[in-house]
Image (cartoon, rainbow, N blue to C red):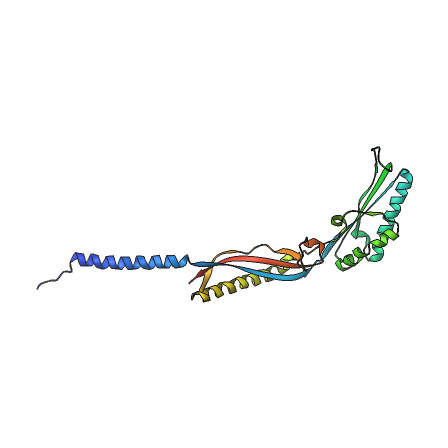
Length: 233
């Protein structure tokens, strides 16, 4: 009985073709795994400050130090009483500075200058917002107000970022996925898994979107931008 053996060259050829096919599929899959789209997702939420602070500054000058001390103490008492009448309590009011300096310069108009700073730290942000607009009443009470707009404007803070963080990140992620799907659909492809993600930092801006520091505004917008790479299949 005669046995037929397949030539070695044919066997090698078959294995070569099979190997090239497997290699080609592997390269194709590898190339597909590197196909991805980078998208960003934006989420915003209106929030209201829950803490506020305010500094009231006064200054007075005189050549008589005893008169000056009595006068600045009177202004301190008037300012504290006015704040309490407006709805704040003693624990929210603090004297940051009460000092008298001797002017050693020859051109000084008065020998002594008294400086007063009173701060208010409170969660009564609506009262603070209202009262800060009535500060002219202190002038009528004899308080010699001083300070620039950066010092005398109340500041408002939103401290509950962690409470809104999950909601904002979820919305931003959904917005990014929507953009990725739109891109893939226009390309005749489908969106796969996430290749890389950066959740971004939650920031605050004024509610009216003006170019100013958000801490001067009672109402704010919390916003986050996520950057995500999605594989394209």
